[in-house]
Image (cartoon, rainbow, N blue to C red; front, side, top):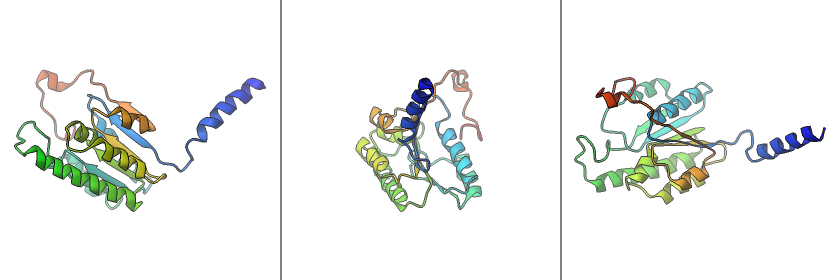
Length: 195
């Protein structure tokens, strides 16, 4: 009997930390593929329960991605904004870093507005960890977004190089680890799979 009571006591302590209707702070990070895809899967699941979802993409923007089209099919429950100007410092990017910084800062302000509106059950800040790592936005501004999140809202932050301070704040952190990738064999990104 004492053993059962002890187990119940441990579990009951854990459950008091999060209320049933509390949202979570979730981080998808790591060098492996699938961070945005996992967040989009969560959005699809949330829309299935008529939850309101907002996704703001910090880096993506100048190229066309499949989710830009498919997300329109999930409106009005799912709202996607590609706030970036495309990938920073790679391929055909000739945009000055200052321009990328200004656009990323605008995305932070937009995120703050969406979070404080309390209209959404789920807010996804896609590639925000990359934006910090690239020096486009400050870590402190992202920690502030986490801090102002209403208790019932789930906030998802994606992108590699998640800072330890963000990991420490999160309720759930998943690291995508690359084991094997077609790019290693010279296979280029595929429509509907990679973008």
